[in-house]
Length: 364
Ligand code: F6P
Image (tube, rainbow, N blue to C red; front, side, top):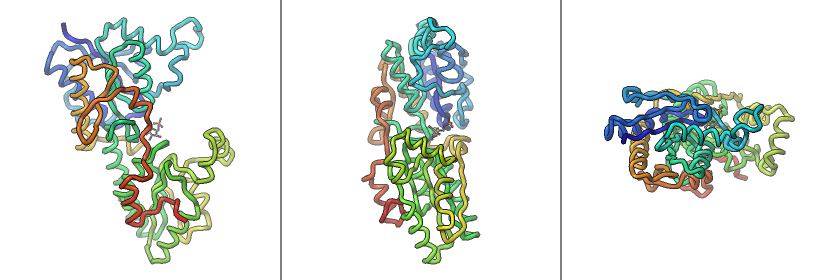
């Protein structure tokens, strides 16, 4: 009998979602044209409320180059899975129970979840409930444990680098300091990679708390050496050494008290009157998550998607395809989801950056 597979995309979108779904679907339909694929709309919200559409094989053609997700997505925090689906109905199912019910009612053989850390934590809860779940590693942040790569990262890295390239020319014309904020709340892979590729002079990451004096010293030294501009790439989640001493709650309160608008504006405010050159800020934000997937991501997504199809045939559930030692491999969803992959402070790429004169704002 033909398989009936559910599929959903969850959390922040990225460029590799459609190519990955395409990889799964093409492999499934190639093997058995009778396969049924039910696409849940807007991520877990669709699964909870049983909002789905039956996807025809034609829908997966022409989406290799398409960013975003043809299924829609939403954020459904993992920590809220125990909450009632309808807060006004205390006897009703929890969100998790509602999802299990939908899966069973629809007599699915497996559910494929394309998501990052949070979404895959929820996927592991579903697997714990006995559902046949396969995960797929999505995120521009590249912060998922036990995989060297996630689809979306390369596309976002490429776009973020283009932004820095663009800023370079105007920074040079005007002889200015630019602070460019790049997405990445908990980890700084995107800021680090695009910062190095875009020729940033200072890179500030959540993993390396920075000192204002160190940043000022780096830009003022450049100015003294007649360098016309300085580029600071700051990750969304970067913080000062003082902030790093605070608990999350204290940090939030302290930032709220001074009208925090973002890491880049905080740095701009702190630098006021202290830098020798004019300072400007640029925030590409969600731009780096948009547009067409890079050629690299199209390839990675296809490989990961096809591997997911193989895992369905082999009934290798509760697991997900990943990249280990440059090759497609498999791991437990839970282990990957609960291991945040930060930039290691002793990584060769940090060392290489320091050796080329890039400051991380932690030097004396
Ligand atoms: O997880 C991907 C990501 O783009 C992060 O880099 C960023 O902090 C967050 O999502 C932004 O979330 P939202 O799209 O909900 O504003």
